[in-house]
Image: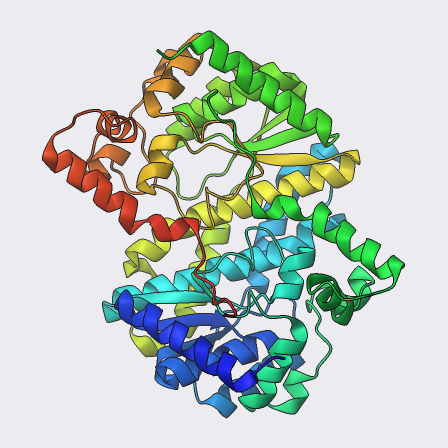
Length: 253
Length: 253
């Protein structure tokens, strides 16, 4: 049985101990308007105080609703929310690409995987830029908090070199239902917590995109029965994306 | 004793086996004009054929000499070299930062760590953008090759979320002197191989910047005697940068 009070308190203690051990000041994280970043922000506010938490909206051809939802989260927990607009950065990047790859007959606008995966990398770069800026300015370290949960990590639903790059992870061992339980317990606004998770990039929910249910991913992780079809799809994604977790390296014999 | 012929052949076999196993087409890597990327490019050309290797110059307020040296490497091994200009991307990024962080009294031009570490992240994003573009265009996978060597990894001399993000590493278990031996054996142009390694970002060589010698790093790695001062500096860097290799994650008890 998942003891939400106990786990929440353990996470708060985990954050406090880590920040004390390394004499750190605060944390920077991207606020997408979805449940995971809201829960992470809430946990860090409880652990460190909301004045130590800096949320960033990082719009990159994004829906205006994402920013409205991010603002709700920031108002609710009382942390500062800043904006770093990435749409122009993205547009200049793809223009530069187009200048140099004409000879291949490749145009940036047609590049499905390249475009979807560029955005989380620009966001990661922004979070580190701001964290290092604040560290320099306040002469004490800021970390970048990750927001991936166990179900996403299990099926490899993240951009390598993007949203998986962080300095501290508090949801990485928690399934979607466990994250929701914590979000409910720490009082994340309901309309944020129960919004269907989507990358905000592909116009599909995560579950539609992968054709799996996170409830089934959780069952596979915990060794509970699921349909053969779901089991096979989930295991296939897990194995296909294993490469994102390690770098094959030549080793001297 | 380091058997350069044996190790070179093993690396070539390692690359071929990995590409055959996963039915991959080719490789994309950044060509900095320095020794590591030249050696990696040469090894991949020998393993896969130079038509399967795409080098990228990724100038970002860089010296013109870097591009000239990269062109020498590409001419020597016969692989295609493309350019993706990142100076404008970088400039738009810092402009967007300045727009939103005025209230802190922080200006991008003063941000030492933020600026130095942004460039390798933009380069990593570019390498993946091109690798995924080519994978889509040619309907067969391209990987991003890393160029870090064992000495750099040991002291943590890389940007987390930047040059350490890659799909395959062939120098990650080789010290600087071993990389030089291989470079000499596969005939990397001497002026590239023996150029003092520099990040091209800070106007200092790597050794000046860290105040250590790679020859001493190698001795520490292999448990050979070095001065107490060098030993302490190297061990301190090793421990200080250990955080770049793992993500502290809360685990359910």
